Image 1 (cartoon, rainbow, N blue to C red):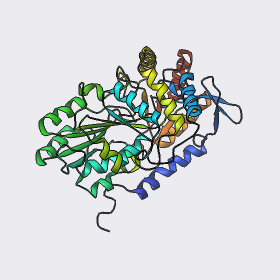
Image 2: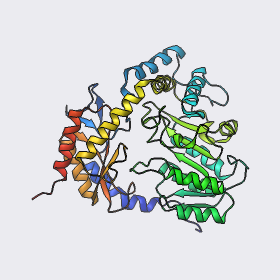
Image 3: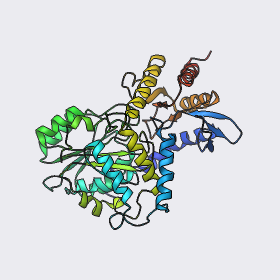
Image 4: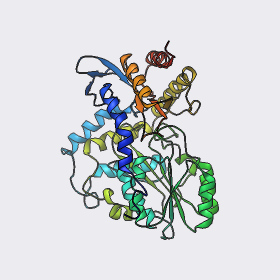
Length: 404
């Protein structure tokens, strides 16, 4: 078939990736069934407890009592779990309240979605068709090679609308060459990447100024942990007003500590068009009522001095870890730390040994990372005590030491 596997190859992904997943399962590292103890640990059925170092709740807001209570309060107020109807037709007033609060905090038109992945599934085809560009004309779409799977998954749909290219990671020369050869270009990237490292946002904005480049960022891993109001890594670099050539999406299920996703649009971008034609954003899948209540409570924290305290606690934990454990992202003040190991089986074994010491960190391997470049991924959080962090660093150093 002509054009086969131009944007995706499930056969290769499964053939080369599944053996490592199976090895991780056999080592007791997948399908862990736990309950939350309420004291910072998770408990297995056999009574063993461990600290989860794979959580993306970087500020610990997922277990913050006021956030949990916010979910309960709105659930009791509305007396329904979900509207089960498209928000385009009917939506609860509390959803409008949440979007208004987030819009004020992050200085953008904010639309709340069920997930960040649903946002990408709905928005990227509208960018490919030109309908979210200021002049309404189709761009050439360039995806950064390291862009998250949730965005890469939409490449074939975008390719049905326009030409789609893949750029080497953070390769400004490649991107500028595409801009020189085409009147309209849209670039798709993460803000901070799930395996560490950041987009070169200032350089991308320079290309935007010179060529009118349209920018689409998934800033999920930086939301809440960066910015005075938790607006993320990208948004503070864009000035007081989000320009009409930039869209930012993010997950509310990471640093924000609740559930759902958020879309940040500029004042002249078409929110009505997004609601009507961005697929999952208009289907009968509104954010569940308890998540709206939790979101309102988290938004209140984001507008208070408590946010800065949690951000500072997270940075202190990151810097302590960087002092104790060398990684390629040391010094970035970013909570995702990847310890490069190499062989897939070695990464699985280190993860198993770390769990035996009371900490869960995921072994990452193909297709998450290139083949032969497996590692151990640790996610740091503000609500991990210094005593626990010391024990974690000791354990990481122990399992990384050469064996006789």
